[in-house]
Amino acid sequence: MNVIPESHSLLRAVTDILEKIDPQAPQTILDRIQNARALFIAGAGRTGYIARAFAMRLMHLGFLVHIVGETTSPAPTEKDLLIAFSGSGETLSTCEVEARALARDVPTLAITANPDSRLAQEAHHSVVLPVGPNDFPLGTLFEACLYVFLDSCVLSFQRVLTVSEQDMSKRHA
Image (cartoon, rainbow, N blue to C red):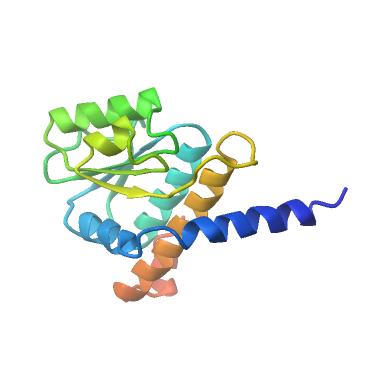
């Protein structure tokens, strides 16, 4: 079985979406992150796994990061930032985490494909990955775009913050 045609199709679609993202989005994310005491990351399913990978890289860059729902995660405060991820922007568990954060006056940043969603509309800031209807199953295209976008952000943050790979390696388990 040859998966190269599907790979090319997915990579072309990811590239097309990434080119449509607001070019200021990475700076928006970095500005919010740098203004926070600690970062709280929330997401469910495959999107949640990608959010966790981003959290790991943020930790490697030197930020204090917590995964919402982990037993060792403290309660966020108004000095922190919740970054909530959902392709649909309607994932109940992620929206509930955002609602609880907002009730505590915690700044929020939503990353979603749906600018009209509950998650995006209620967040203080949002970044939209404009993934519309497509031929890929379930949330595959959003998830692929999210992974590439977030890792690209990390590379840019590393350069802007002048964090060397050696610095990052010291924080790697």
